[in-house]
Length: 544
Image (tube, rainbow, N blue to C red):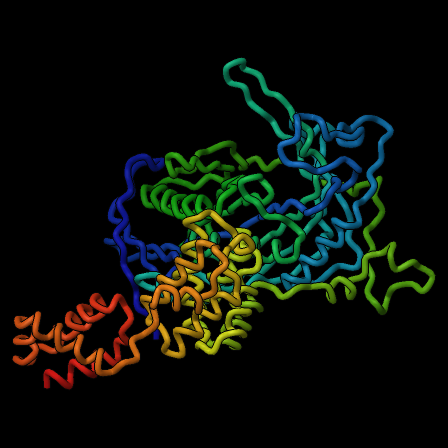
């Protein structure tokens, strides 16, 4: 049985190329699919999205030279003779970059080619002084992998679904320089600091159909790279750049002509660019136009893609084997020669043994071990890696080990209280004035019934001041413990009943919802020191 359809009306302005898009209805099937149909003819359109992700490798030096890699260094201060393409220079392959590519391939379930080759990709551009890029187009280091990712779905985006995108290949290549355009002086300045920096190009098959899916896949890839330490993946610094290949077609028909949106440096902008481009192409086709095979750029200010250059006359890159680099040979435990120093070769099995716990594995373990929601495990892992909240998962697990409270309640305190205070004070987990043991002591007091939940929040705020007091000391000094004298609590409840005759009258007429108001009044009188369940029982007894 087909899943239900969620229909959202889309209003598109005449800013779209070749006229307006009329009566378009976006149909979301299984939450985030991008099936689109015309409101009058009931004909569906499907978006098709493939990605090429360029990730800068974590390395102190460039891919083929000894020049340092440093963001925002003075222009042309990190350029070797090879980077500047001076005659007589030869490339020397960076072993660390090869190991990083192999580790990434293993993490993405790829087959590692034990023999890969480098090619020259010829094209002319001012920031590419040698006139070609060294890459691995024809025989890459890794092929045939997959990336599992999750995204929020549903009408209110309140539950998660899992998706899978195939990885076609991972190839090593060198970055180009940077062109700085000075419109005021009508000149272009060239900075070659980035020229020769090692990149991995990760090519994803066209298995995605909308911006949300593509953005979620890139975020998951970013988490994996950061976990492995093979790339910082900082998109704002250009360490992770995405090219999106987008087309539309009707189900059962061949894929349409694709347009490529280049150099997107934000997951949010990626989603916006793809969704806009899908609607733009549908608008062109519905108005009798033709989609051009072209390169486009995304303008984040207008939210539109802009044509850059036509690709109909396909450029001949004249790929040829790189004559200055021999084939890259990689070994495993079975194939490594006995007369070779293990430190001088790349060993697949040795790298596989060094793989850390990957984000998806960590999320599954947290859910299975502690019974928390998948959404909460996603939040923990995502914040730990993407926002440099180093130790957040470890903080959570330490608290769980040292407290008697249910892990599902601990995660609530971590997300709703602990993270909120960190954000308000612009602190990281390691800078927090509350240690895991301090939070554990507080939660144990709450679990054992010594304090109420409202008092626990007060004590948490006191602990955050970092005055060196424990939760027990704060409770004792401020007399915040729950009232244990049952008779005293009965007297307080009786006083509240006498002071609120109107509410009592409503309850006696059958409106027991008003009882919550009386419970709140008791809490106000006791400053949160009364157990709500005990107060409710006393009030019900007196009013029944």
